[in-house]
Structure formats: C-alpha cells, structure tokens
Length: 236
Ligand SMILES: [Zn+2]
Image (cartoon, rainbow, N blue to C red; front, side):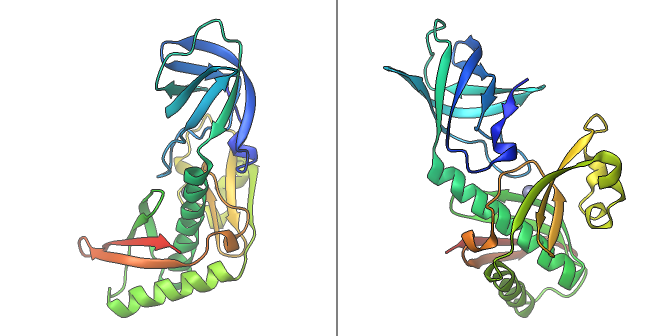
C-alpha cells in the first residue's frame, strides 16, 4: 500500500521513499507525493532519482492500493531508495484550478440551484459542466463570474479532513455532491471544505486559501442541451 503524501499535505514538493517494486519503466514506492489523477485533475509529472541515476515521471496511476509511477526510462533494479521531485509549477496550477472549480460549484449551487455534472482542469484552463435549471443568458454568465471572484477574494480557508462514512452520508451539504457514489469499501471519506461555500468528498489537491487562486475569467460558455451548460475559464 502506497502512503499518499498529497492527501494530507498538498504542498509536499519533494520527498524520499523506499522502492517497493521496479519493473521496466514502472516504479512503486512506499510513499509518494505524486497525485495519480482523478476527479478531473490530471496526474502529476516530475522526476525520480538518486545520485547520477534519474528519470522523468511521465504518468502516475492507481492500481488497487498502490500508485504506479511511469518513467521515461528504466531505473536500474538495484536502486533501493529514490527522491521524488514534482513539477511544482504544473501541480500548483492544478491546485489553483481545482479549488476554483469547487468555488464555482458552490456559487452556482447557492445562487442558481445548479448541480455540477463534470469538470476538467489543465495547467492553463478549466471547464465545468452543470445542470442549470433557469434561463441561460450572457447576464447570468457575467453574474456567475462576478460572484465567483467575490468568493475568491474573500480569502476563504480551504480545509481538508476525513469523516466516517456514516457521518459523511448524513451531512446535508455532502448529499448534493453525491457522496453516496463513493465505493462502500471506503470507510473514511476525505472531505474538502471551502469555508461557508462548498463541501465535497474529494481526493484531489487544493490550495489552502482561496486568495491563492487569484481571479477567474470566463473565456467561453456553451449550452449543450436544455439544461446542460458548460463554462470554460482561465485564472489570472
Ligand atoms: Zn474536486
């Protein structure tokens, strides 16, 4: 089982770990700060190495309770310990966009009764799909942007903690985000809470305060059917 350092501290940029398994270009470590991707957030990139030996991490994936790092070249199987370094600029961008998506999600839920149906973040942009019950106009889009920027500027703390499954399922804030979709075997559920705005069961990495997100600018919006809407945005 890989210890997931990013779960407790999203700001871990470097770490040392023991090699559990080395096979070709695949490496399993006893602990890692590399996020494997999920919930619309891409897997991390970076490097693994020791002394003169090194390789770039090009992909990370979850395999049962272990995380597999895929490197651009094989690391000799005599290696026992490795140091990992994240491509921090890229990861921090994902953290900012991920938190922005949750703020956006809280804003449209509280103000428009709209529910998120999907989201995707990149280093330089993100998009969110949602089910919007009202009329979809340029004014509404402008209002969403204004309210989201207002919420970001309020410097709201972002808290990460765990709840027992039963407790999470009973939390009315969490029901709208379909916490019941979390597999039954997961007994303790990781929660990401943006103060007084948005609470979700979430495995991703986030900034600690909305002030780190900056300002968002909606760059595109689409109507993809009667209720299905999409917003695309960048951060400044
Ligand atoms: Zn999320």
